[in-house]
Length: 104
Image 1 (tube, rainbow, N blue to C red):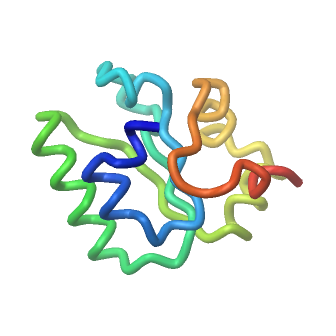
Image 2 (cartoon, rainbow, N blue to C red; image 1 turned 30 degrees about the vertical axis):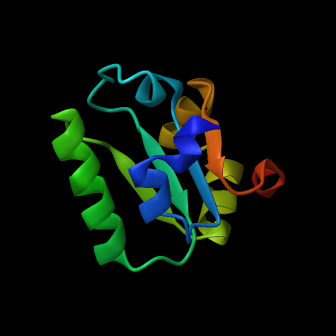
C-alpha cells in the first residue's frame, strides 16, 4: 500500500498497529470530535508528537489521534468506548501491523 511508505508511517514504523480513518487517507476534513489515527504500541511520546506535528504542518489541519498499548485498546473495545466505536465505524485501514491484533 502506498500509504505505508508515507512519511508518517515511516516515522511511526515501531508501532504494533497504526490505524487510519478512511477520511484521513482521502485528506478530508473530519468532525472535530472524530479520531483520525490510532497508534498502538510502546513508542516514545515525543517521537509520536513530532511525527503528528510534521503531518499536521503538511496538511495544514489538526490531526486527532490516540496512542495506547494493546491492552488499553482491548479494554476500550470491550467497554465499547464511544471514540473507538465511532472510529471503527469510519472504515479504518491498517497501515502498520496485523489486523488480527484487533480480534478479541
